[in-house]
Structure formats: structure tokens, C-alpha cells
Amino acid sequence: MMDKVWKSISDKRPKGLNLIKMVGIVSILVWIGAIAAIFLLKDKQLPALAEGLGHGGAKVAFGHGGHAQAGGEAIEAGAPDSEESTPDEETEDESGTELAGHKTETGEAGLAAAGAHGGEAAQGSMDGEEHAASGAEAGRSSAAAALPSREELAALRQVAELFIAAGEPAKAVTPMRRVMMMPTRDAVLLTMATDVFLSTGNYPEALGFAEQVLALKPDDMRVKVQAVEAQYRMGRVEKAVADAQAVLKEHPGELAMLTTLGTMEVEMGPGHDGYGKSLKTALKLKPDYAPALYLQGRKAQLEGDYKDAETAFRKVVKLEPQNAKAHGQLGMALYHLGKEKEAEKEYRAELSMNPEDYNTWFNLGELQMSYAAKERLPNPINALRTEAMESYLKALEFNPDHAQAHFRVGVLLNGNGQYREAIRHLEAALKADSHHVPTLVQLSLAFENLKQPERARAYLTKAYELDPLNKVILFKLKQWS
Figure 1: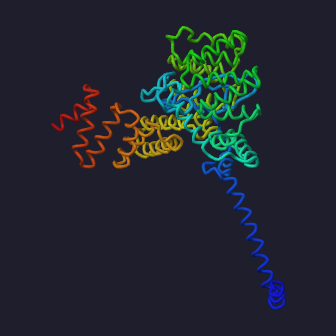
Figure 2 (figure 1 turned 30 degrees about the horizontal axis):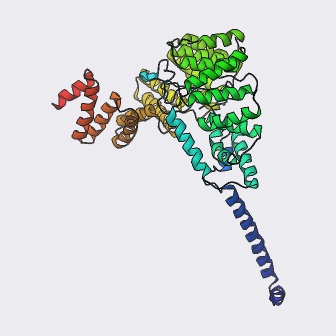
Figure 3 (figure 1 turned 180 degrees about the horizontal axis):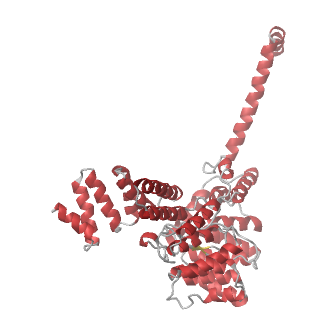
């Protein structure tokens, strides 16, 4: 019967037949596309592949420390620069460890900033048990999902590899977690997982996969270094130091492990017995070893010796022109030496390679505010403040919890008369540091201008309790008495 219907349509409406055929073909193609999309996006958290490929050039690192670093610097195992390599580009040969500022916003013990704009401090980002617990929880939630099929595993691995190749390991985390739900003895895959989870601060997972690699390849020195770093960042300092020393006892000239141990010694501060010892040994073995030179620069900054820091970072940049973090750290040293134009050049070089480094965006904002303070005419001042605002907002785009960036934006908004917006940013800054007196004063100012005297007085009173000798606070309280 259907044959007769089709024949009738064909005889009477040949154009209608062609139209029906075209609609049928289009429908089939739509269904195929939909099925493929459902398959690739089965895990709702899987980032769009197009997004990953659209951000080429962003490097992975533990970040780099800024004038007022929110996260501080963490060891980077492996190479001088596989951003956050926040973290620079990891190399297989002579991979070393270095201080880099991965975005670990929890206040951990470690490297204090060697002079920050506005007197802020940079902490060495040694992650504690809270960070480890959050990583484990993320792993458990991933395990709750259905096991992927063989075809899905292949697709997910390819997506993860594309994100890694694009320099965006953070976006590789979700597909990689799905891939690693299936047990494997593939050392290449396990090593890739270790790299991804270590560079993104998921230290418990990184340690677990590193241990699996070492079970298959006990002599893999690069992974041994990564395992030590993961232990350290999880707060297992004694274990990390002991493991590093055990390796060095057997391989005393292993530069990567020497620099890793040296970083831990530096982060533990001058009071530590081994402070600077392993770093000195590494540089004696190879004076042009970039990761050790980078650590030397960070050590000099910790000690407030910005001239030596400049010298060390210039050597790193000469050896590795694409080392984004070294450019950023050189910029910070130059800023403290009063070489602002040179500092800006280094900041912009760093951002051209790693545009998501929120600390460097913040540092650039501080530099622009420094320029504004030296101007006398209103138009240049306003233009520089606008540029600074844009830099601070960029910092917040990539790290919404950057307390100092929130504070700076709040101050600028107060100055523009945008008090309600200022309060939103200032309260975010206060959430991170409830004892920050300048933030309390700015909040008091904002509420006073909004004709809310009780709230204004409450913030100023708290500021007075914390700093009873502050002349600005005393003057304002006298006005209200």
C-alpha cells in the first residue's frame, strides 16, 4: 500500500517527493549528531572541547607570586616551567622543582613574600589536610558516576589530551577522572594523570597515580620527584623530606630532587637546619640549572634582596625565554628596585604567555596605581586608575577569592561614589581577612555615604579596637563624638 502512496506522490508531485527525501536525510543527520553529543557530554561536567581549544597559549603552573600573592608559591616538580607545568613547561630532561605560586588560597605555612605592594605577604602554598580532604571528596563524587564504556574511555582520553596540549590541564581534570575510573597498567596514562592532578592541586589523586607508576617503573625519577611534591603539598612534610633524602642518598647528584628538597628547605624558613643547603649543592653541580636559579631568586626575595633576585631571574629568562613565571618574578623584583617601566614589560611578557595568572594581573594593577600616584593632572590620573581597575577585575576573573584585588576594587569604587558596589567587594575582602583595618575603614566610609551611620560606626569601632593608634580612625571617631 505504501508503494502505491509513494508512486502516487511521485507521479503527481515529483517536487514533493524530493522535498520529503531531503527532510528524511536531514532528520537522520540531526539524530546522528544528537546521539554523538549525548555520548560526548554524558558527564555533564565535561568542558566543551571547543572551549578548550579556544584558549590556546594558556599555560599550567602553580602560578607565580605577586606583590601581594593570594596563594603563594608551591614547588613545581618536573620542569622549570610547565605553568602551573598557576601554576611552566615541563621537560623530560633534568626536570627540576621550583617555587611557583599555585592557586592554593588556603593560608598555608611556607614562603613569606619578600616585600609586597601595600605590605602584603606571599605564603608558600603548602596545602594542608583540608585541601587533601577536598580532593578526596572530589574523587569519591566522580567514582559515583557510571563506569565509562571502552568507546567513551577512548573519547574522554582524547579530550583530556587535547586540553593538555592546549595548555589547560584544569579542563582536563574531569575527563581524566572519568578515564581513571577504570583500573589500568598503562604507565603513560598513569603518568599523564599524575601530571594533570599535580599541576591542578589535586595532590591526593596525584600521589595515588604516582605510586602506581612507580610500582610499574620503580626508577622513574621524574615521578619520584612528583610523589615527594604531592606528599609535601598534602602537609606530610616529614615524609616528603625523608623520601627526598632517601633518593639523594642513592643518587646524590639528582638535580631535580635536590631542587625539590631545596624548595622545601627554603619554604620552611631560615630557622630550618637545612636552609639553602640543597639549593647550594644543586647550583654547585650545575650553575646554569634553571629550576635551581629560579629557587635562588625566590630565596633572595624572601630575604628582601631584590638585586640578587633580579640577577637570578634574568639568568632564568635568558636560559628559558618562554618561562612565564620567571618573567613575572623578575617583574616583581624590578618593581621593588624602582624600575617600574622594566617591571611592566616583564609583567606583560608573562601575561602574553599565561593570561590567566591572577597574581600578575594584580601586580600590574598595583603598578598602574603607582603611576597614578605620581601624576598631578586629573585626566592622566583617572585614565591610570581605570587601567588599574581593569587589571584588578582581571585578577578576580581568574581568582574570585583574591582578597587584595577585592579590596583595591572597593577602594576605587568608593572613590567613584559607587558605594553599594564598593561594599560588595569590601565585604568579600573582609571575609578573607576579618582583621584588615583598611577594609573596615573603607566599609565605614561607604556606609556613611549611604546615610547608614550605625553600620558605619560599627565598622569603624571594630577598626579602632584592632588599631587604637590609627590617626584616621581617631579623627573620624572624634568627628562623630
